[in-house]
Structure formats: C-alpha cells, structure tokens
Image 1: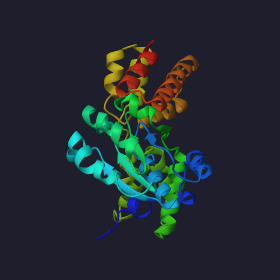
Image 2 (image 1 turned 90 degrees about the vertical axis):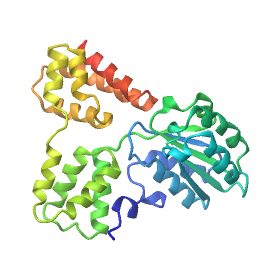
Image 3 (image 1 turned 135 degrees about the horizontal axis):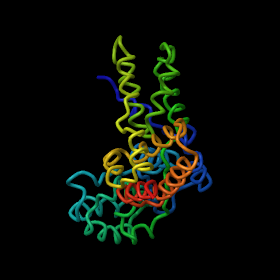
Length: 297
C-alpha cells in the first residue's frame, strides 16, 4: 500500500521544519515545554500539529493526541471519561495535544479549565477559529499564530520531498513545483497534489491543467466590487472559497491587471486589513464581508 507523503515526510526535528523559523526559534530558546499553548491559524495545513509533534520529540516528552472534531471527542463526556484519567497520571514530561479545540462544546471547554490546572503535563490546543475558543482558555495559554505558508515555503517543502522520493528528475519538475505552490498555501494539500501528479500516469499536463482553472473569477470580482459597487454581487463571487487562497489570488490577479492605480491601492489596503484580521482570529465570514465592504466603498 502506498504511504501518504504528507504523513511519511512530516518533520520530526526542528531542523526538518520549513517556513516556521520564527516559531522554531521561540521553542529552541525555551529548551522545554513548561506552559500551555494555543496554536492558531485561520486555514488548515499550516503546521500546527506538526510543530506540536516536533516539540514532543525534541524535548523527550510523551505525546497524547486527541481531536475535538470527531463526534465522540467534542462534549463533556470526552473530558470526563477520556481526558481526565490521562492527565492525572505520569509526570510533567507529557504533552496533551488537543487538535481543533474550537470544535469543543461550551460545556466541554468549561470542564477543560480544571483539567488544565491539575494536569500532570502541559496542553497544546490547536484551532482555526480563535473566536470560538473561550477567553478563559485563551488566557491560560500562550497564543501562537501560524500564518499561511508563503509560495516559497511550499516550493521548498515540495522540492525536499521530490529529492527524498527520487522523482526530482521528472521533466519540468521544478516548473511543476512552482505551479503547485502558486495555488496552495496549505502544505498538506500541496503535498497530496504533488503525490497525485507523480502517480497520475502519462498525460500529466492534463492533470496540471486543473490548477490553472481558477475557482474564483477574480476579474469579475474586481469589476463588480470596484466598478459596479455591488456588495452582494461581489460577496457572492468569492464566498465559500478558502479565505487565504482567495485573498492571495485577488492580489496576484490585481498586480498583473491593468486596473487604475487608485483601484489597486484600494484593494491593497483592504487586503492588508484582511490579513491583519486573519492573524487576530476574527471569523472568516466577518473578514470576507469587511474585505468586500472596503473594496466597494
């Protein structure tokens, strides 16, 4: 059975991590985990879970992994029956990784308070929607924001994998990597696409063509927002798409377009504010609506 590359090539040490130098530096300076953390990113595939696993490996700590997005691990029953027994035994050299903590019910988040205060070890919570994590939990953790990967980061990750898988000699592989990186800020999905491309068969160009068919009509969005000043119309065009990828796509298209200078500056300012809101953990729907509002005004 073919092993999934995004799992097979997941970093295990600090030196293996690409595109997270600032975060790695923080933990290297600490030397160990001695407090609770909340890893936040607006989009999936930014390395939150990977960094938690690297920390456990580097500091010789036992790792216990839970995922709050599953039906059985969202409510108070999970806290009382699964989490509490695990956290009351052993020593402090344990990390309790709770992925997608923003999916916990309010009752479960409330019950988690006491668990974190009395645990034999430390918690790392991950989330995509910071607004859905209770203020109390946030205040008990050091919050670290994971930005979307830059294109160069994704390209470096993919290039490393092609070398390890001995597929670097494929025709136009570097061009392929650049094309994949252009369309993916999610490292996991980029790696999955690369593996699918390598295994696709003879007509690989046909497979790559899907990358160059944009889901969002950026030209139409800019026309409806900037020229026609239609909030509802512009929002409808980009709603439902991955937010970080959509914002990046709008920027890339706008830079190459022949739009007026004042229109470009308007969009740039709206994009800057949207990126700032992404880091702050504001919900995607609000960020999107405010971005469109600023483009229309």
